[in-house]
Amino acid sequence: MTSLLLLAATRWEAVPLASRLGLTRAGTHHWSGRVAGRAVTLRQTAMGAERTAAALAGAAPGLLISTGFAGALQSGLRTGELIAEELFPCPEAAAALRRSGFPMHFGRLAHSDRVLADPEDKLSLGRSTGALAVDMESSAVRAWAQARGTPALALRVILDEAAFAFPRDLPQSEDSLTLARYAAGHPADWPRLAGLWLRQRQASKALAFILQCLLETL
Image (cartoon, rainbow, N blue to C red; front, side):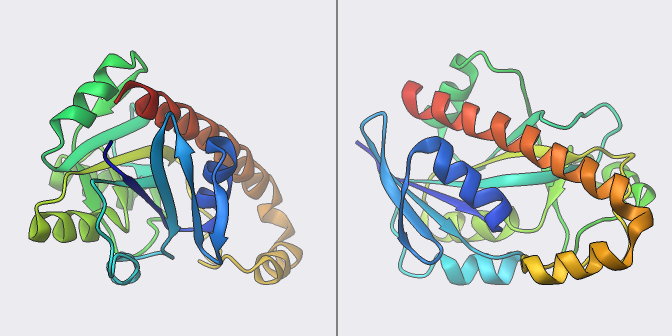
C-alpha cells in the first residue's frame, strides 16, 4: 500500500490535522501513524516555498499531498470549502476525492511569497491567473514532484474569503508570545482576530474530514 506524506506549513494547520487523523508525534515537526491501514507521515514545513523544499529533503513517498489553508481568489468561495489540484498526475487520489462525494472545487492554486492581506490583492491575482485560491507552499511541492515523477496533490481549505481583510500589521509568526503582544497592542483588531480563530477551527475540521475520507477511499 502506497505511503503518504502530508505537508502543512504551520502548527495551526499541522497540529489539529495530526490530532484528528490520530497521528503520533515522532519529532519536533513530525507526526506519523497509520490511517485506514496506510502509513501516513505529516511534516510541518514552515511557511514559504523555500522552507517547504528544504523539508522534502530525503523524502520518498508514494503519494505527496500539500495541505493546509488557502486564501480565496474568487468571490464565490467560502471558508471551509475545499480546493484540489493535481500537482503531478495522481489519478487514483483524484478519483478517490470524487468518489468521496464531499463538495469541493477542482482547479488551480496560485503562488504568493507573502500572505495577501488586502481583498483587492486577492481579487487582482484571481483575475490575472484564473486561479481559485492562493497559498505559499504548493508551488514548491509541484516542482519537487515533477522533478522526481512522484504523484502529488494539493488539497487546501479556504481560510479567508476574498473579501476578508487581515489586519495589515499582523505578524507572520507562530510564536504565541509575539501574537499575544500584537493582540494586546491592537484592541481594535480583536473582533477580526476572533473571527480568524473561528475560521481556522472551521477550516481545520473540514480539511481533516476530507483527508480521512480520502484515505479510507484510496
